[in-house]
Image (cartoon, rainbow over all chains, first blue to last red; front, side, top):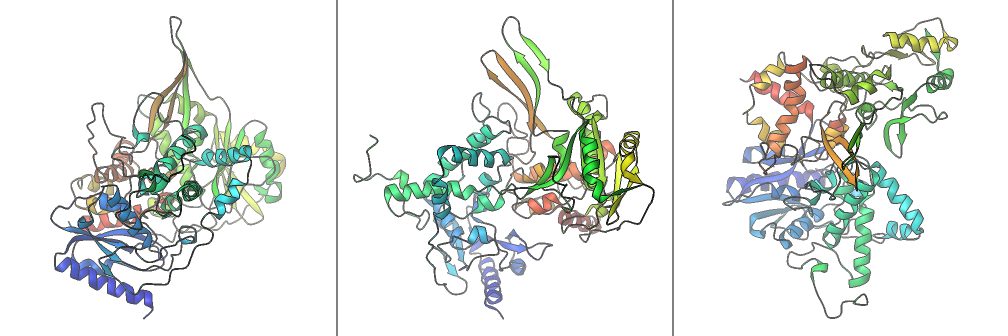
Amino acid sequence: MSQVNEMQAQLRKVAAELLETGTVGYIIGWGATRFPDRTTPVFIHDAKDADKLVWNEYCINGLAKYVLDDKIKDKKIGICVRGCDSRAINRLIIDNQLLREAVYLIGLPCEGKADKVKCGKCAHKNPVSYDVLIGDLVTETPVTDRFKAVEDLEKLSADEKHAYWSGVYEKCVRCFACRNVCPVCSCKECYADQYRVGWQGKQNNSVENWNYGLTRAYHVGDRCVECGECERVCPMDLPLMLQNRKMLKDINELFGDYECGLSDDRAPILGEYDLSDRDEYM
Amino acid sequence: MLLDKKRLKEALDILSREAKVLVPMGMDGIAKYTPWDGQKLPDLDIVNTMLPPKDTLFPQTEKMYNFTTGPNAQIAEVQATENQVLFGVRSCDARSIDCMDKAFLSGTFGDSFYSKKRENLTIIAVGCVKTGPFCFCDSMGLDPSSAPNADVQLADLGDAYAVTAQTERGTVVLDQWKSLLTEGEGDAPKPTCELKVNVPEDFAKKLLGMFEHPIWDEVSKPCLGCGTCTYVCPTCYCFDINAEKHGNEGTEFRCWDSCMFSDYARMAGGHNPRPSKKERVRNRYLHKLAYFNEQHGQLLCVGCGRCVQKCPSNMDITRFIDMAGEAIKNG
């Protein structure tokens, strides 16, 4: 049995036990679809359905956002977490969207999935937080090109940058998939859904799309856990992580090495204040 | 009649003299119907463009009125008068225009913004020589190689297209192409879809009886509430009307809306009759598979598979249809 299949078997066994003992109310994981190269998020309530959980290279979708759908008061929600999902869970905890006690984290070390764009710059293959671990921790490989694409973009002139982003937002259809999948976007009501004169216009054009995209990028800012979900779900294949990484690169340059969601007790860096912070703009 | 593929450019040139010709093109990785540039031949190897051709008749943002305010307030309707040709349309997308016609033009009220564009549109369909992994049009009662409501049907014979006029407008096109066409006929491939769906008999009616069925909880769970499925869908036609005003001048416009958005059904005062994803997913599937059938006697899903392909959560309407079919069978 391959290692992945062993992990899948172990995952199902652990899931069945967690449901049988009532440790969790249900488990969020990945399940099969009609297509061999796709999985879909599944919600397993019954131990006998634990075999519907799959673990393979197509377990690509981020799952953390789904914990916000339900507030089970008496039982924990079990959720499968890879490195990216666990960082997203931490992010939700930091922002008081979720109590750590409300979730039971089933950690799954992940060597990267079939989506090379999403997983290409992953610096945390192992879950950074878990209650039970499936399989063995894997060796982390340092990422050397985290900001490579940003650096390339920064070399362009202002006009070239403007032309580049105009082109990007010309294509955006404003389906809001990037926002809805994002574990950072947890506002009860998004500013973009509010009807106000002179607010976010509903027209689809590059100006309004750009307004939406940039507002979201700034709002996500230091809280991006770099899961790459926004870019994965974009039906127009827009380079959304480039924007997020630009923010993170600036933050790293201004405030030192920073990655969001590595623990559940460190506030996002822009929410911290330190006397040594740069203040030349004051 | 036959049109040699070597003369396709000339054929498009002729159409371009009197109309904006839209052809399937893979632009920056996103295939869509794009105004023909007079040079590059259409990308007819694409089975389905990523974006459907619906914005030809129903633009994502469409100006309706220009207005001025004040004592001499004026309102002027913005009307499209340009002739358009959709070239290389697949059976599913041709049928989707038939669905939109029913939505916008049938009944006592015709949508003038749509009808003006529809009157000036020529549809030239091309039969599929292969189907894509997400295609299921033949399960929805369509034929991948034939689009009955297109003005002209092309059938791919390898080196040439067999050309058939199916409407008066189509006859005009063949007349314009006269110098390019040669006598002849041939057999085009008759592909079928690999993805099969079992649409039960009287499905629409039976589905209406399942409004409170637990199936909706199950199928809606993975939904993220984004608009991807509705925006890539060739038959989703919901819109919202809004205005933009600067000083005393402004524009009233309409833009695509999506029943998957949380604010779609929200009323003044804040009440939302579709408060969660369950109600929204149910509404979309019922509109596609039941409500539209009640109003217009046909399903509002043409089996193009775009929503299946692009859903961020890999939700799958074919799987839903089969699940609902099972539920119906099991009473």
